[in-house]
Length: 334
Image (cartoon, rainbow, N blue to C red; front, side, top):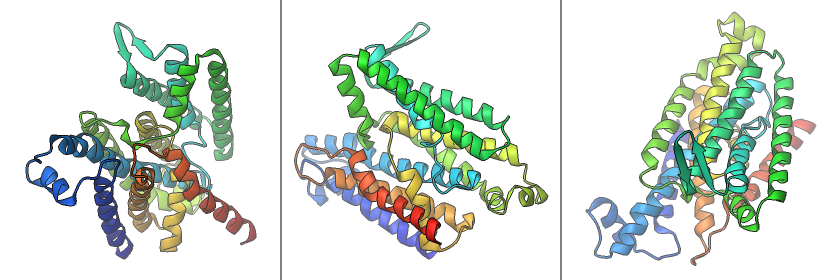
């Protein structure tokens, strides 16, 4: 409870800092007026806060919580400290969808009589690709008994998709490759104020659903046989975990790009803080830690007070790689 309160306060502080930081300097009093007093005399400032910084801050908060939760669900389900949606190939599937749109279809996507272009086409392509891989993983999960084999299959899907993307890049124009590389940098600023409600509802519903799985997750920590003796249906439970993970990872990757490391490192940070694997306390702390770390990374990306923006996937490995190395070495020499 203590850590949850501290992390919630930290998230509020970091969210405030995100609203105050950017290439345009806006006084704190004006930010308050824009958000709570009905506006500002400077219409440009109001536009920046309402249309850019506020959606970006909310997106970072929800995306961080979602990615951290997916990592926790997968690490518990597969009893593997390095499991996550990126290992299962879900992020790679989203990348393939985006690559097909940008590199093969020229930035537009047709579904029946409907045709999409620009940002909508990229998001649709990413969602279709991620959901396709998730469907394959779910189908295999219903047939395979070994979690290790499922992880290996996920890795192989990721390698196969990466090879296809490389092949598409070799055929594409320089502009298409540049657009795809830019998407791959990751960015919490890709969701507009109009898109935010749909994104928020889906992520929040998945997070709340994850909280209902605390008891089965605790049972899985004790082993499959013990969990079955406690009344947990192993295969349906793992399929539910994969389904929730697939939805959240698909949404975040589609709208924000393939964000590295947050899904892997945050559950370990939460475990190190709490010194426990009990999901009753671990789940909310993981969500809050993910939200706070995503807000921190987004803040670092905007710190240079210029028009430049540090790519998100430049910042997250700097934070995440040392944690992953620590976890590997700790388990090796423990």
